[in-house]
Image (cartoon, rainbow, N blue to C red; front, side):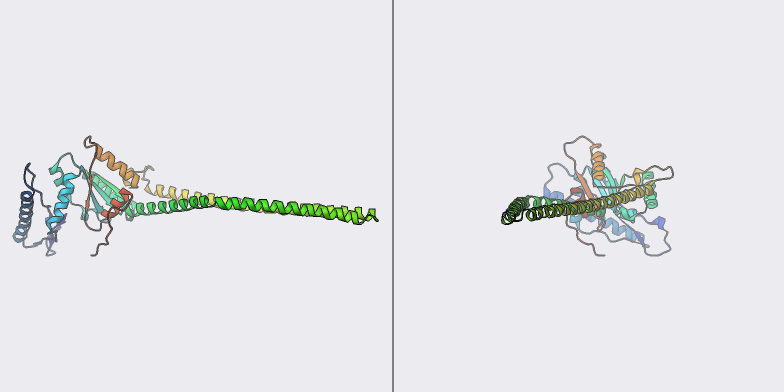
Amino acid sequence: MMGNILKNSDISVSKVKALPIPRRPKYVEKTEVKEFERLEREAFLNWRRALAMEEEQNIHFAITPFEKNIEIWRQLWMVVDKADLLVQIVDGRNPLYYRCDDLESYVKEINPKKETVLLINKADLMSIPIRKHWADYLKEKNINYVFFSAKKEAEKIAEKDKYNMIDLKEDEDVEGGKVDEINEDEDDQDEDDDEEVIVNKNKFDLLNMINNDNDDTEVNEEKFEKKIENIVKTNEQVTEEVIKVEKKNEKTNENTDNKENKNKTEENKEEINIEEEVKTDDDSLRDDLLIMNREQLLKYLKNKVSSIETKIAYNIGFVGFPNVGKSSVINVVMNEKKVNIIPYLN
């Protein structure tokens, strides 16, 4: 969780050792709350005295800053005590710097059946060769690990919520548009009535023209035929215009479909390229290098915790240094805001 640093550059790095975390005293049945709190404070003060003595004996060493508030350690003790599976979140840019191997030892001291997992957050900032290096190292050390990116998953959830809101709005528009559809039908009916009146008027005009021109039957017939020809010609022109509009709409739809198919093809190509990047020399995908999404992480944690022992419900604890993404990971896993994300100021 924290380690000694060198005061002088002539001290070799091999002499640097990690500090142990304070141990919680073992609870004895029927111990009163106040008495147990006293035992906790005593154990914590003894741990601090041991660190001070270590620093005095090794004057070339300096103790790195550590948490001096016992309440913070009580929170850690409680999580370790209740969790069947403890997930230690680290920053992918320097996993070992944020990893506390003594915490993993402490978990096994509490209960050998408990399991720990190293969740390497911000893995999207790691290149594939770097992920391969860490995967090989952690497997060699027999450390359970997963690559994850809370930021990427949060963006996916936000995008999905955005589309859901759009779909919801469209559904509301459709429901609200029923009145408009009825109005449109009424408008169509009105147009049909107007057309019928116009047709009847044309018929009336033709009849009047015939009746008024009884003296010249041939002229009346010519005018009548000419009138009919004009009406037919007008209908033909309207029909041609309608056909042109339909063809134009068909062409527009074809262009839209082609554009959508082209975009889908490009997206598929991008997905294929991403997969090809993860391929190894034997041209096979290495699952241990893939960055898990939310569903894959949940499935992994479920399988991991259910393999410990059979229980009705399991507890999964999340711990980590400030600014490694604990709140983001928890909010993504729960698919809702459970923890406030407060920017960490160095």
